[in-house]
Amino acid sequence: MKFVILMLLVAFTTNVFAERLGSLKSNSEIMLSTATLKGGATSYIQNTASLQSGATAYPDFLITNMGTQGGPGGVYGFAVGSGVGTIGFNSYDGGYLAGVTGLGGLWQFTISDGKLIYYNESSVTAGSAHGHSVAFAIDVSGNIGAGTANPGARLDVLSTTSNSYEAKISTTATFYHVAISTNGHFNSKGTPPVVSSCGSSPSIIGSDTAFTITVGGATTSCTITFNVPFNAVPTCVVSERSMSVINALSYSVTNAAVVISQTGLSSAVLDAFCIGRD
Image (cartoon, rainbow, N blue to C red; front, side):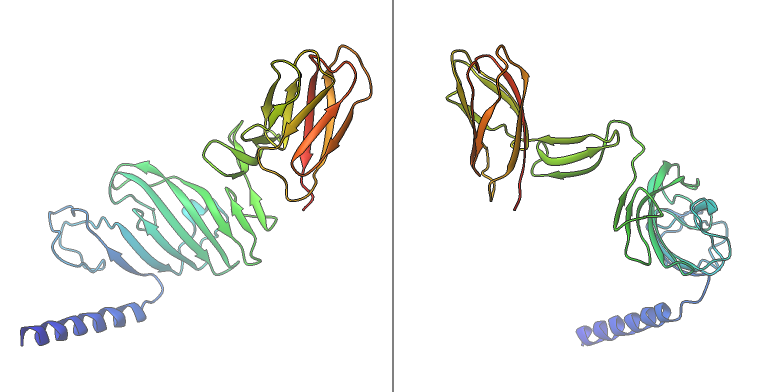
């Protein structure tokens, strides 16, 4: 009998909540709050239109359909008066206030241009307004922006931090196949190829994509075996940085290695760049 009564209560509560969700109008809200309210009450669900006297809501999660609410301060192109659907995390009310001390986050969808944007919100004390920066955006054409609300390509990455990477494809936290820095540099970092048959005490730095070899003494050849073989024979360019005898370099390439030969190769410093052609 207790089980039946419990199930009836669950069904009733679910229906009431579903009905409430289905009847959201412009400027209405769903608010889930776990933070302590000013006034001390924490044990009841609130209606923001009729809070306990003296209490202020500090929600952890907020969904609102704001018919006349602009974007954060109108800074990112949301004109006041446009329809903006919002999901706020530790961010509530038209002033984007923090429910508890710390960071916040905000998803916003604008009806006027079909753009969906996620904003990082600054760390502030409870009840204070967050600052905003664009983290991620998708526009109506399917363009994706990282760090920009106005992507101009299928993937548009904007970074204003000097000497950081705008894009990076990594295999581990340490190594990456290719990276593009904010300075416009292309970089590659990985396990270096293996150098052999290259005189006494040769050395190599770099990755399979770009590497520098210091040839050992008393040799006329050098073999560089890729750390990971290419699927097909790559295109490689080898050039001399420093050589005691300047002769035309001769080298052959397979998908697994580069073999360099030349008279007077001893102690030479060579640079090489290889790119796959799969």
